[in-house]
Image 1 (cartoon, rainbow over the protein chains, first blue to last red):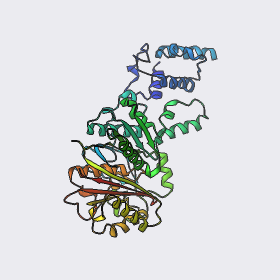
Image 2: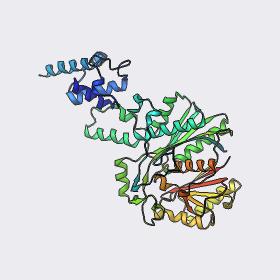
Image 3: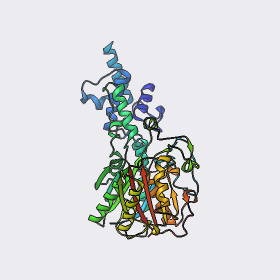
Image 4: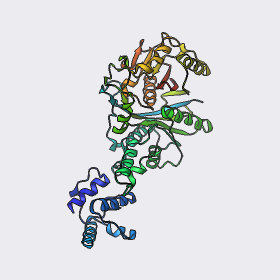
Amino acid sequence: MADLKVQIIQQLNLQEVKPEDIENDQPLFKEGLGLDSIDALELIVLLQQHHNVRIANPEDGPEIFYSVRTMAEYITAEKSKQG
Amino acid sequence: MKAFIQGTGSISAQDSTVFPATIREYEGNRLPVADPDYKQWIDIRQIRRMGRVIKMGVGASHISLQDAGLTMPDAIITGTAYGCLADTGVFLNKLVTQQEDMLTPTAFIQSTHNTVAGQIALMLGCHGYNNTFVHGAFSLENALQDGLLLLQEDPARKVLAGALDEITEYSHTILSRFGLYKNAHTQQLLRSGTPGTMAGEGAAFFVLGAEKNARSKAELTGVEMIYRPASAEETAGHIAGFLQRHGLQPADIDLLLTGRNGDVRGDAYYDNIETTLFAGRPVAAFKHFCGEYPTAAAFGMWMAVQALHTGQVPAAAMFKGHAPATLKRVLIWNHQHATHHSLILLTAC
């Protein structure tokens, strides 16, 4: 999850945010890191570029991108499916 | 139609908070913007998506609004030749390297020429007139003319008008191939007598109103453009005609502020007219402070407004003659590549 936090910070250019500032279960959107819909698109690209993971159903987005932990769990699950 | 300039803001190679008492000197072939702390004007959550030219534009517009004591303009007008060049480069680069796949939206939505005017409006919550002029070295002048027309329609309006352009590594490399730039020191640039100049970048904004108020710093008396005059003589005729249309003669101009940039090819125009039409008149310059870029006249206008407001011309700006003891009228004559000539007449108020 530490690597994922670094990737999120780089992809979204979160200036003055350090990986340790992001809690694993902290909401990424709205009250948490304050991300918005454009950031959601950036996170989709991050999953594809860094982890070769695509989101098949866009309606799953809010659940997948709820926190760093839910993102990591989704990546792990998709990777295991890919073998 | 004329307007009163009620607020100004500039972000350039000079630190506008200390200029002209402290002048930054540069050596090389470009003058980069002295970036202020943009977080004083822009929320950190918004700043992370902004390219340099957007930050420059938003910052300069904030300074000008603060200077005018205005929180909400009725219109926002910008002029830019290159637009948001850095973000355009990022987007196009990804388009190529990623074979048109997995493209992120941020660089794309930040890459349009109207991004700065749009961003200023979004941050202010301004739903008024919003326009951007992209006319090369006439971009500032068109923005100013549009502002004057808006005030003619409705004198109660307050118009935020300005111009901006940035240097990127790509653009500088490409433009350098045309032989536009040379290595120099800003102190010697204007008298270097060789081809080429130093590149520049910056943003400057002005709050325009039809009525004079306590914050008015100068009057924008007139703006005109001359495209591709055939000779210096034809240019001189246009300048004389412009002054006549405002009831003036060359002798009525207290200071001629030219866009002289140290490139001997283009400066020949200034040499000619300074010694004929404006013989004996004091002449100043500004591009050794900000560098050459298509909207550099915005920095010249910002500098001229400060001079008219304080009554003092920076000694380092003088090119010919002495700074006038009294400063009533300044004529800014700028040209780029001898094809785009512009005239901006400012009067003390």
